[in-house]
Each structure stands twice: as C-alpha cells, then as structure tokens.
Image 1 (spheres, helix red, strand yellow):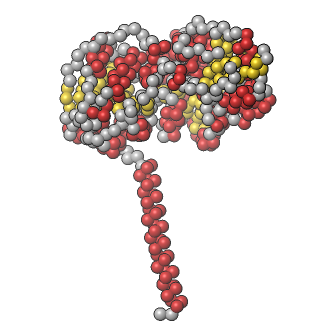
Image 2 (spheres, rainbow, N blue to C red; image 1 turned 30 degrees about the horizontal axis):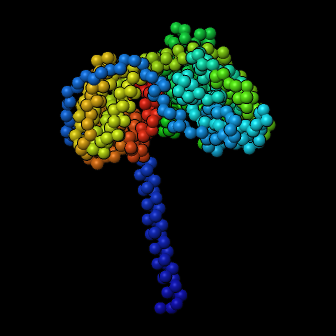
Length: 565
C-alpha cells in the first residue's frame, strides 16, 4: 500500500476514535447534567397511588402513648441561648483597654460582607489612644435578632451593638435594658422587595408605580406569590412585618384595620422562610415572584440584578451604633473614636466599594416605631400568619442503633424543649423508626393533653436496629394525607430528626417524585449527621436544615417553630 494511503487510513482511524471518545465524553456529561437537573413530575393521582403501594410494604407498629410531665412555663430565652463562645469574635482586641461590639452579619461576614471587620482591623493597627493608653475593639459578628435576644435576656452584654436597623434598638429599650443611640448611620443601606422583571412590569402597568403599598395590595389580591423571612430573627423580615402592617393603618399598626388587612395579605403568602438562604432557594425554583433582601446583598449578586427589580421599603438599614449599659467614660471615648473612624472618608469609600451607601435619596415611608408595638407585632404575626390554614405536622424521629447515647438524648431534649414554641392550635403527631416504623402519637391538636402525650412518647424513645428513614417518611406522609382528606385547609409539614444515615427499606429515589408532587416541606434536624443527605431531603420542597450538633439547637428549633408553627 502506498505511504500516502497508509497515512490517510491512520488519520481516518484516529478521527473515528476521537469521535467515539468525544461522543462518550459528551454523552457522559450530558447524562450527568440531565441526571442532576431532572426532577420527575407525576400527577397527584399517581403520587397517591404510589404512596398507598409503598405503605403496604412497611411494617407499622402502633405504640400506646403514655402521658409525661409538661412544663407549662413559657420558654426560658436565657436558658435556650448557648454560651457566647458558640459565636467567637471575628476581630480580637489587640490591647488591654478595649470595647466589644456586636455587629449584624451583612458587615461582619466574608469578603464584601466584611466591611466592619476590615475597618476594625485598621482601627486596631492605628495606635489610637485614650487617656494615654492604646485602645482597640473586639467585633463579634452575630445576627441582629440573635444579638437582641442575648442583650434582652442578659445572657451576655457587649459594650456596644450595631444592628442592621433601629427597630432592634427600640425593642431592647422597651425591654428595660439601658441602651443609648450613639450614631444613626455607620454605612447606608436599605431593605427592599425584589420582583421578577416580568412581574414588576405587569404590576407597573396596573398600578402606575411600585411601592410597598401596591405590592401588599397585589399580594392580597393574589396577583403575586411572595415570600419573606422570619420577623423574630431577620432584620429585613421584621422591617417587612411592621411596614406591611403600616400600609393598612399608618397611625396604629395594631389596630383592627391593620390586623384585618394583614390577615388578607397573609392568606396569599406561600411561606415564611426560616433563613434568607431558604428563601433564595425557593426563588430560584420559580415558586416565588418576589422576596425581600437588603440592597447591599443585591448590589453584590449580579444574577439577582439581572433577573429582579429592587423596590425599597420600610425603615432604612443604616447600621446604627448603640452603647449598651452604663459604660465608663473611657469606654464611651473608645466607642466614639471607633465611630469617628468608621465615618472617615477612607472607611466610607470602602463601604461604598462593598455595596453600601447606595439609594441615599430613599426616605422612609414610615418612622417612629415604638419598641413595645414592634414586639406586639411579632406576637400578632405568630397568631395570624396562618389564619386560614390549620397547620398539621408530624415529627419523624430516628431511633436506630446509630442514634444510641448522646444523639438520642439530644434529640429528646431538643424536641421537648423546642415544643414549647409550638402553638396550641397546631396539630402534631410523632413517628419513630429503626428497622420498623412506629406511630407513637396520632395527629391531634397540641393542647395540654396532646402535649403531655407528646412528652411521654418522646421520653419513651429507645435506640436499636437498622435505619429505615424513607419508610418512616412514607408512614408520616400517609398520616398527613389522611388528615388533609378530613381537613382541606390543612397545611402539611414534616420534621425529620436523624443522623442522616439510611441502610434499610425504601430509598430517596422511591419517594422523591411523590413528595415533590405533594409539596410537603421536609425540615431536617441532624444529630451527629450526614448533613448533606439531610439537606438533599429538605431541598425537595425548599425546606430548611438544622445541624443539631451545636449548643444552640433548642434556640434554632424555637426560631424554626416560630417561623413555621
């Protein structure tokens, strides 16, 4: 064979091999991508048939409930909060003479969320003196709601506090704590509603302009699906709550007119998120037309700016600075010098670079909120947020062998203590599982009798056997669906408490499409857990996941139950 033909044959063979390899690689990537993105959707009828079929495969034991001793005292906030060491300082003091400052997280986090930390480090390097002594600051980054709870409870008092907005300061003052406003603004910021561009244009055509009043009217008219964050924990969520009430009655946010308007508005809110992250995930899934966020985060998230329009609302989030307690003259002077340092041109240029100091022309539509009224608004929200829905929840507790000892003890403690935050008009049931599944407590209103049965059922849990997590979810779902058949207004939810390891019974793939169709959120709480496995379970319907291997699990569960029950 001539050399040229040999070369041509080699080239053809090599080209063929390359195409096959390319095809395999491309096919593999496509399969991987499609597998990762695909979410099989089945009809409600198919989902219910599947639930019945799966349920028949499971051994279910009915446990006779026994009453336990109920603690009728309200939750002790001070006891539920962990030691402050759970939240270590991001900036340590560098001198013997210093002050400690609690800071909200949008300015005490990482990268562009770390403005105050960068300023504090510069301050500590600047050799600033008071009374002839070098001074410094310690910054402890901690969410405004959590920081407020530490201060109000007296569990831990910093020298100063810079929350996102002044609402927290008013609440602290109304609680009887000695607090004084030192500076109204460290760095400019505002809260806002993010609307998808299509929904924004639609509402703009109808209302002529977009503001919070128009948005609340659109929600009340069921023209927009919107979510917001827990007003007990989130600065933006609390601002949204009191601002929404104010749109119905600007003179009295607790009047009958305001409450009636809020009830109508709340009827069409799909859900209130436990965290901003949970809400963001729901927005990504297309469930929501709008949600709330601070402008500084919006500015630093290009994909949000691309898809959403920002409309400011409520009080400004200008990071005020408060002195806590009766500070010595020396500490007051350190605080004043640090505030001056934050207000310097160099520090403000950095704040602007990090997304602050925008929308400075926005003037609050509302002002002068009373701290006592804010706290009453929070209580009102807990009572009225599901006024047209009867919340029904089943707790699913892992009692397999891997939960023996400390994990099960923590599960019991957190369930009993956390249940104090559950309203009496919520319906609660309990399922436990190892190799088999036990119905420890049928669903019923969480009155004193059911609370007593719940405590007794939790106290009697004992570990042993394999881990049939998805069998238990199937049984709990069956209970919830039966309740829904009796009460169409029932709002269903599951709470799975586990170490995340499943080695028996059905799999995630067996239930995933069915649970997606049912739309039941599965909140997961992990004990010595495979957190990723539990997160995957929660992500089916955009629920939250909590890592219970921390001292603050009771506080976290309390926040979760406040948001959802």
